[in-house]
Image (tube, rainbow, N blue to C red; front, side):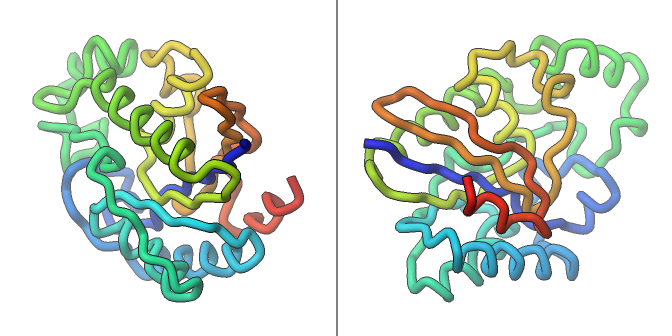
Length: 207
């Protein structure tokens, strides 16, 4: 049976507004992020998810909370949905890193991932694992998952068979609260929509 899985990036935080690497730093969403969480809730009234999953990080929990309250659903929090740890880059912009580190990361963000941070291959493995678990547990249902920018892009590459070290080039943007929609059926995955902006979330209900 087909499972529809929609992943939403969490709402904006102060660091994301400044384009700083947030990763494992547990920041709340800002005022714009709160509005984005409300927009996600408004879209969910039409989508009607049967189940909610989320990263346990504060910004993800705050983003999914209005939807959970509206629908009367308790999100399943799973640590495999947490953001990639960016190590020495946490709280910094790319331009603030040593030039050699920044250049190497831009050329190959997997082989030369940020110093002290999580290996993107390991992150891709854990998110694919939980993604398939969601598909299996909710066969024939619709699921909304709130997670994180880099993690979602790594998942897209992994399930579509794209090189992980090209995730920044092939998927350069995923806006706060933007959605990615997958079709999961017996372990086979199809991508139906990517980076749908918050103000156009209703268009996903027509797919």
